[in-house]
Length: 89
Figure 1 (tube, rainbow, N blue to C red):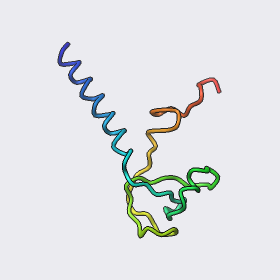
Figure 2: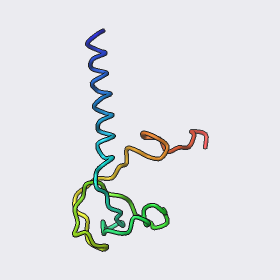
Figure 3: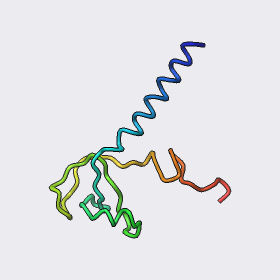
Figure 4: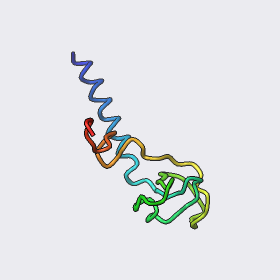
């Protein structure tokens, strides 16, 4: 039993640290072609295809292509992996 608890604790700590690793990571708002856009495009949710990329690189100017990075698809406003609605909606 003890070994099982140690493994569960280790997995939980690993998952938590992975989720928090992106908190201080650089992010860029990009359009569907990964061209850098103002953050307001992503925050407003009104520009189709606009999303944040975390950890990518670009020249720093709007319109530059952001290379690399990843989206934060595992975390949403509703919590970890939850969209905020109920199953009955």
